[in-house]
View (cartoon, rainbow, N blue to C red):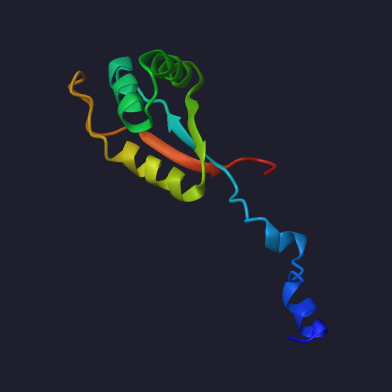
Length: 114
């Protein structure tokens, strides 16, 4: 093998800074909205089942959604946030409240400044 060819083969291909790093997906919040048709028990159970939160964390989030009207339950990629929002919508009604006709409401939004 000639010296020039050997040098060319051994020399790494230069990459730009952007090519070296994988593109980071912008984060999204999953937001749970308050209503009067779901109990703390329902909210805590849902957050434990869908998000893996502890009962204590579930209670804290239930209290926040009750007092502030909304709470961020997860920050993640857009695709995962959409899945979690859809899981909240599909969770079903609160059997402890007769007037409850369905699941709680959730939305996703991009994290500001990201």
